[in-house]
Structure formats: structure tokens, C-alpha cells
Length: 395
Ligand SMILES: *Cc1c(COP(=O)(O)O)cnc(C)c1O
Image (cartoon, rainbow, N blue to C red):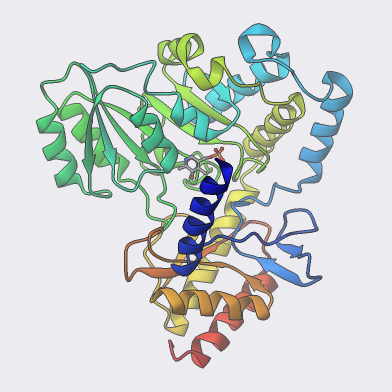
């Protein structure tokens, strides 16, 4: 039997390769940081990590994690409701709610699980989910697992959202679901207008702050801070795997009864392991760092502005962004791969994205800025873009 299946897989893999869509993995032999060492021995500047605040290799987080290993051991060997809840898990949940101005929080092994487990326990076939067309894969999967009626609106298109909301008036409950920051363009969801429409058409709102928490808003509280609507959305999901230290873990935070129901019925919570105490401890430390000062957010915002201004001055076509994501538009898929490869030769690690990850003829290089970058890192990246951009006739 396997011989036939193997042949089938080999053929399929070959066609992925032929289409140029096969994903290899570059091996890193240093901690995640602004400057990393690849297995080839090459030292490169990293502009493609979600390490927005530079906390992935933070001494303070490492030390918090290490002491938690001493006090609480390595793993939990349990889901939360059996024997997988420590004081650290509870403290982190409270701190996350404090950070976002919400009522309660539930932790998951990943944001993928938070999104996968949020809809099915709350909504039934009587209800409606109205989802942005560019929402993260985990939201799409979560929606699929739920029997609610699905509506999809064009990315951040408020007219389209309004028409879907009007169409969904027959349903019992409605929820609008959106990413806070869309990861390919770096644009933010227009949350002020989404909330107006939610009010007008009697809908709840859920925001996934995975790319925006720690990043967007003056103090990094995400898009609810950016639009001055902190505490006004019913559900926020997010990850500990990006700005928040970058290890692992996700959460849903919001209205008390919603979180309580998720603890009773959310399948990835009930049937998947509790995060290790060291991750919870480092998460607590991370939120303490953020509530003490704004240094990291300020540095990230300055770095982003500096890089984008530099790139625009060189004549690059940059997508309007309100996050730490900068999409350098090249439009052509092959060109984006060539450009990224040549940048790596210059010691700048970025990724070129093209169809089907982005729309056809919308190929680009995505640059992710970090508070870990210093001025010299940014200047080196801009200079490399200038050199390759000139060579390839783009600027
Ligand atoms: C990264 C991301 C996730 C998944 O986060 P994990 O914790 O790595 O599972 C979910 N939603 C959005 C919008 C993301 O960007």
C-alpha cells in the first residue's frame, strides 16, 4: 500500500517544487536576535523575525524562565483543568487582562489554538461570523470548526462589511472577526469604524492582536489602543510567540463570561497540554517590563520610521503601514526571490513573498523591524537595498 502512496506524495512534492513553492528551512545556530549566525557560518542581520521588541533573547526573560525551572520544574504533564494550572499560569492570565484592559484571560499552547478553539464553544448554526478576507489561517480554521453561518468581507473594506452585516441580521448573534495587523501589508484593521458598524448592526467584535500586541499603539497595547477603544471589544486573541518573548503560547482575553465558557468547552484548552511554567514566568516578566516603561515600543516605532523614510527616499515602493511590517513592493515573484537571495549575500536576511501567499503580481519583500536593531543595522539594510535595487534596475 505505502508504495503507491509514496509515489503519489513524491509526485505531489515534485509539483510543489516545479511551481517554485517548496519551502526549505534555513538553519540558525545562534539565539534569535538582530544579528544571527546561520549553519553556513554566515553572520546576517535578521529582518524577518517577529521579534518586534527584541525580547526573544532577553536576559531578564531568560533569567525569569530559569528561576521558574528551579521553583516549578520543567513541564506540567497535564492539561489545565486536571493538574496543569500553577500560580504562574493564573498570574500571567491576570496580567494579560490588565495589559489589554479586559476582564479575564485563558491561555493556550499557541494563538493557533486560541483561534481554533474560540468560535465553536460560543456560537451555533443560529449565529453569524463575519470575517475579514485576509484573516490568519488559524481564524479561518476556527471558523470552519463552528457551525455558525459564515460571511466574508474584503480586507478592511467597511462598505463590504456593512453589506455583510445587513445580510446577517436574521441570525441570533453576530461577531465581526479581524486581525489587528495584516501580516503581509502591515496595515491595521480600522477598528473605530468596525466598532461603529458593530453598534449599528448589533454585532460583537473579535480582534487577533498577534502582530499588533506590543507593537501598535503608543504603549504597545495593540489596535484597541491605537483607535482609543481599549476594553471595548468582546474578544482579543494573541500570541506569546511574537513581540511577547517569542517562545510559545497564545491567549484569548475579553469578557468574563466568554472566557469562563471557553474554559468549560474550548477543545484545544481541554485536550492539549498546559504551557510550561518557565514560559508563564517569562511572560509575567515581559508584561512587567512593558508596564514599567515604554522604551522598547519607542525604539521600535523610531526604527520603523527611520527605515521606511530611508527606503522611500531611495525611491522604493512601500505599502502604507501602521505596524513594524514594511512591504517593499516588487510585484514580480522571481524578482522578489532574486532580490532576497542577493540581500542575503549582503548579510541581510529577509523573505520574498509571492502568490499564493499574496495576490498574483503583488510579490514583495517583507521587512520586519525590531527594537533590537540599532542605527547601524538599519543603515546597513538600507544600503544593501540601495545596492541591489540599483543593480536590478528597480530604483
Ligand atoms: C502568528 C499568528 C498566529 C499564530 O500564533 P502562534 O502562537 O504561533 O500559534 C495567529 N494569528 C495571527 C494573526 C498571527 O499572526
